[in-house]
Amino acid sequence: MKRTALLAALFLLFNACGSNEPQVEPNGGEPTDPNGPVVQPSEPLPGLPESTAGFDSWLKMNAEPIPPKPADPHRGTKDVFINQTREAIAPGGENQYPYPDGTIIVKSAVPPGKDFVGLVAVMTKKKGTNPNHNDWEFIEYLRDNADSSFRKAFEGRLCENCHVKAADTDYSFTVLE
Image (cartoon, rainbow, N blue to C red):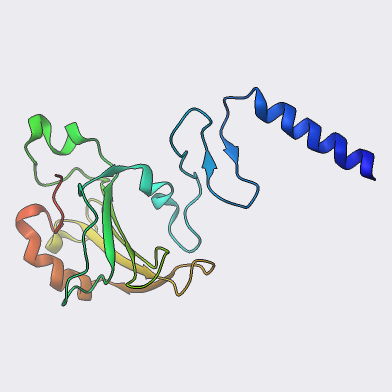
């Protein structure tokens, strides 16, 4: 038994040392690239739609984390990501609206006093989905701790009533910086 465990450990060590492939941390952490930045997981976070997989590797719209605001329905420190390139949504550095069909914007928030993402709000632009709100579908997901799955918390009219205030920037409060 000990010999099998030793051989397995040597095999893993040998294969990991000479490889440029992403390696998974033994403690269940995120995969890392031995040559530099973190490699984003290809699976969505538990409870989130497949379309959000790896959202934190998408183009980040805000230059600095967005701090909590008193009346903000998305409580916490936020980052906003979009599945488009800078050139597609801001050619020549100038934000262009409306965003293309198929755009997905994800806002993630770390709740006050916590150290994990507890809120993910997803805006998905699908032609014909919601003509009254420029074809955006709005869904917010919440979770209570880092080990739990996200659950759908809010969608539809509640979100639309707030985001209509940002109609000039295609219903997104965060613009590419």
